[in-house]
Image 1 (cartoon, rainbow, N blue to C red):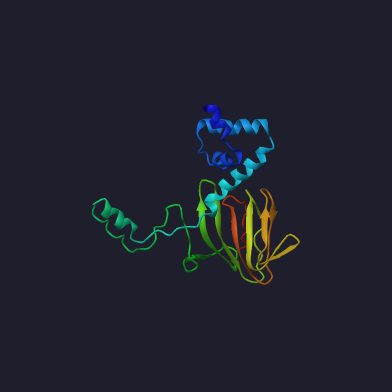
Image 2 (image 1 turned 90 degrees about the vertical axis):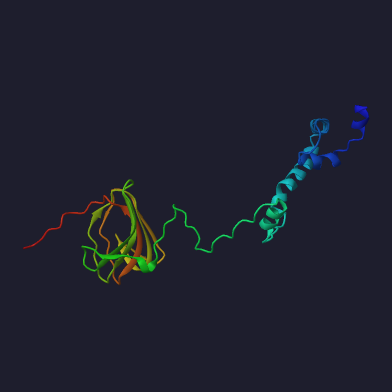
Amino acid sequence: MMQQNHENYCFCELAPLYALNVLSEPEQKWVEQQLAECPELAEELAEYQSAVTAIPYTTPTVTMAADLKNRLFDRLELDSPPPLPLSAPVVPSSYFAVRSQDLNWQPHEVSGVSIAILSTDEVKREIVGLFKAAPGVYYSIHRHAAIEEIYMLSGDLVVGDQLYSAGDYIRSEPGSVHGPYTNDGCLFLFHTSMDDEYPPVVVVA
């Protein structure tokens, strides 16, 4: 009886079902035996398996009916759930943003420079903020304790012998020293260390 069933098997019919993993154990073993005896059948099976993998991505999205929950509660003879209050979306606690109108610009000790701090990390000793300088400003020479990253938003900035402008990204390695300046003024986003080293300011009496 089992031999008769095997004689009725057809690889082209069972291969798609094998790819879907819905065959009985004898049928599954028969397909695997055919694959062992005829390796060229593996290519045909691989095409079916590839098609099965694509099924979730090709199935059209079905929009859930607006009253589905109420209909389900009615069928289960339960009280309908109260409507959700209309309110602003819940912001995850891991999310943080600063609106442009809320930027807190503070004057820097370097004349003509203002800084708006966006975030600080006391553990990593990192600070992220916006730097705005008036035309002709020379920033203090300093040594970087860690990597500094700058993304130019507007204006110009000269670092070493290179001139940077809007859209440019500047990365300074730990231990590097520079004293950048701007010709026409600039605005940039910076990410740097709280522990950068600045020479002491000499006050002339």
